[in-house]
Structures are given as C-alpha cells and as structure tokens.
Image (tube, rainbow, N blue to C red; front, side, top):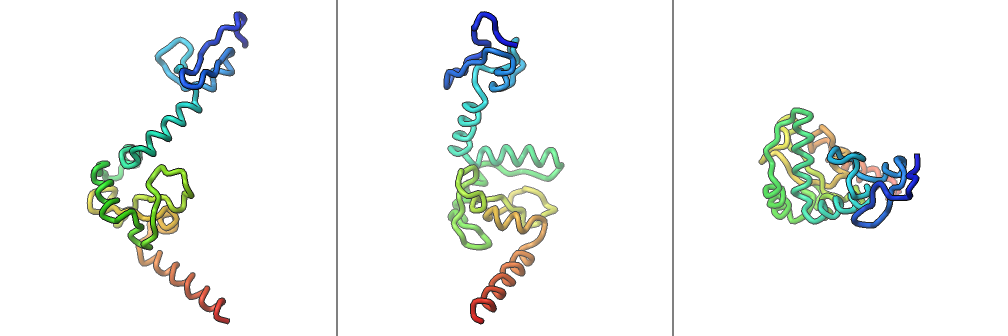
Length: 167
C-alpha cells in the first residue's frame, strides 16, 4: 500500500530517510506511542546510537544486560557497573587465566579477544567475589567447566604442537 499524496508517513530525524508506504515503515523502530506504531528514527540510526552508547559506557550496559539475563534465568545477581569497572582496573585489562590483553565489552574488534564475564563457581551466579574478566574465546571453551578443564585443553595443545614441531 503506497501513500497517494506522496507525503511521508515517517521521516528519520537523524538521517532523513522517508517511509512512504506501510512496507517502508518496517525500516523504523516500533513504538506504541503514535498512530503508525513507529518512532521518528530508523532502525539503522537507532542501532548506531545504541552501539555508540554501549561503547562509551560498556560496564553499565553489560551490567544491565547481565541483570536482565539473570532475572530471566533465575540466576543470583548483585553486580554493579562500578564493581565491574573496578574489577577491570584490578586485572589491568588482562585475562585472568591467560594474561592476554582484552578488549572492553562492546568493542567492535575481534569477538574472541573481547572481555567476557566469567563465574568462578558456576552455581553461585553473577555475584560480587564470584566473577572475573577472561577473554571470550576462553569463556566459550570453559562454558560450565572449571579452570582445570581449560588448563588440560591448553596443555594438550602445547604438548601436541611440541611433539609435531620437534619431529
């Protein structure tokens, strides 16, 4: 269905893109506050703004996301963005398990090197004293296992490479 008068139904207040049809309205953010059910900002501009906000204050947005996830999954949670920032500084931006430099959360670099919040004891939840920063690649490997599991895998990789490179 197109707009007969060629008057835009919505115009993005950031980039100026127009929606002249109901199909084109899908490019805009949903809202229940107006008759078209869309805000005056397109999805691309909204996503860009949100990425910039998360990058500017990553600990705040990670804390909000983790809190929401924990509420949904009924996992204990009592962290604050201030606590996460202090923990980051205490670790010097280094992965506690590998010593590798990490990128802050929501950094748009290689996802494997981005910091990931790890629970030391899985069943205790995301609570003060039970979390630390590790690189995402290690946290993906670790999942619900303990540090010994990660060390065993790492040692096997080192031993295997030593055996094959020294032959």
